[in-house]
Image (cartoon, rainbow, N blue to C red; front, side, top):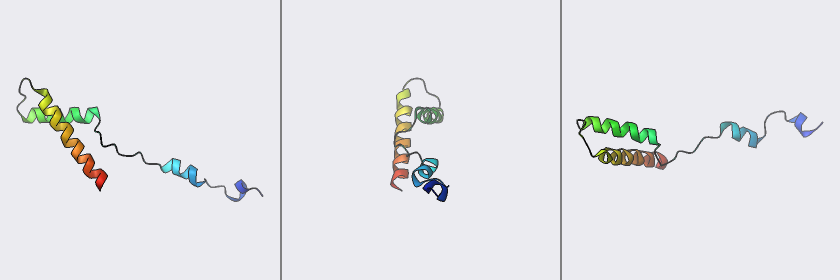
Length: 72
């Protein structure tokens, strides 16, 4: 009887591929930053100009939140 007949289940390497979890990136994705920046802009009363203020705050907020998740 061959090894494959004795052990019909998947090997450790095959099992790992099935359950492999994608690592969490510390860098927020564009759509996440855009959504939060829009929400922050609305909270500020939708002022004209200075979109970089909300974008920068959104990036920093998401970045800090992800760093805390990675440390846990």
